[in-house]
Image (cartoon, rainbow, N blue to C red):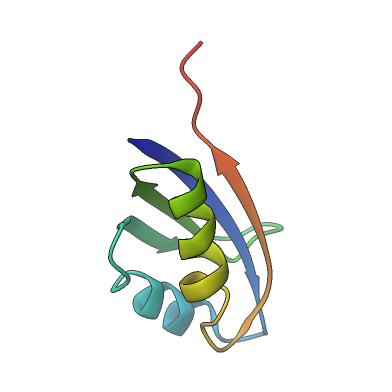
Length: 77
């Protein structure tokens, strides 16, 4: 199982809607609107890195109101 944090920038005023919609995507564990340089932070999981990438590109980035994403895979050192 691969987990990652996805940091999301949104259009002004869209953070809550984006977080709510992303929270409904299968594989998303949690989606929260936050303050700072990013507007939404998501924790997601998938069976493989490739599957995680497909989720981000095909599902997360397609949500209306997103302007940029940064995916940070969780590592266990």
